[in-house]
Image (cartoon, rainbow, N blue to C red):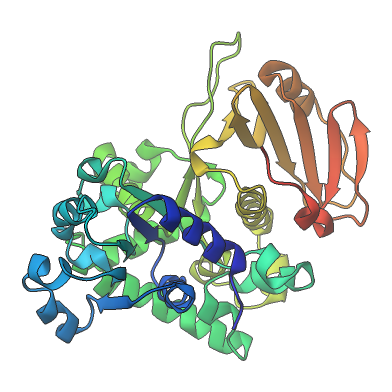
Amino acid sequence: MIKRKSETASILKLLRQFPVVGIVGARQVGKTTIALEIGRSFKGPVHYFDLENPEDVARLSDPMLALKSLQGLVVIDEIQRKPSLYPMLRVLADDAKIPRRFLILGSASPDLLKVSSESLAGRIAYHELGEFYIEEIGIQSMDRLWLRGGFPDSYLAKSLAQSELWRRNFIKTFLERDLPQLGITVRAETLRRFWHMIAHYHGQRWNSSEFARAFGLADTTVRHYLDILTGAFVIRQLPAWHENISKRQVKAPKIYVADTGILHTLLGIKNEIDLERHPKIGASWEGFIVSQLIRILKVNREDCFSWATHAGSELDLLISRGRFRYGFEIKRTSAPSMTPSMYHALKDLKLSRLCIVHCGEKTFDLAKKVRAVSVHDLITLKPLA
């Protein structure tokens, strides 16, 4: 078992500040394990409700009666099964007479559930729990993490074959059971085809017209499919940054399969040899490193963008923090060099710093405000203030 100390510490910090904390993330990503760990370290009574357990569902048939007198930490797992609890939590969170905190776990975003957090404004904070990342498993295991992905059961499987089997079953169960339980009525086979197509577009710009033609559907329909998989945390969108500069900029987001292990299964990649020979290896590597950078630098996804112009200049990752802008280029090479696109990004975006993440052994300055960072030194990067 891999201890997720940073994630646990972040959630405990939120619990000290907010009466309700939501841990959201994909199915099987480890939310329950984290919640149980927090419960063991919590000073006071802990009450656990799992909405996949019929007995706990029966206990919450009258939720106000079941919860209003409880003290300490109240954990409600799989809350997406009962989004009607949100308004009631506002009432209970406002009851200052009873010392308690609520920890709610969900496998879908509030937007996908069509529930509003407005009633809990000022009372709730969300923490998105991702898959394992380099800082947790160690840089020496990076290639294993990239190939298998960061879902705990996939990464920790005894063999690569067992890992791949787990991922295939995850995809099947997610489409055939988990999404319908969220009220999604789109046929599983349709979303399977869509997810496979996304895998082949991994690391590219979203083109709703192209997807619509492939499926014979309206642009709005395929955009709805994208929002479903994004809201369930299995697809990630990196919004395009655009501002008033002289160049025409691309406004479509980049799309990624959130976990590289799932991506590889969708692409039919079973092992290291398959990965090295596959035409999507560069895109897979880019998505993997972008995800690692966001986690290591401890930035909010709302501050993360991609950037491109119609003239061909682009930047893999742009992080905007106040008046500072940080650019990142990911190159699967051991000999990084400056390109015209990088010079344009530095000038047009007024970058405070540009980092080129590469596969070589050394980290060194490449130009003014430009640093080539070895992937082996990623975990030495400091969080952005």
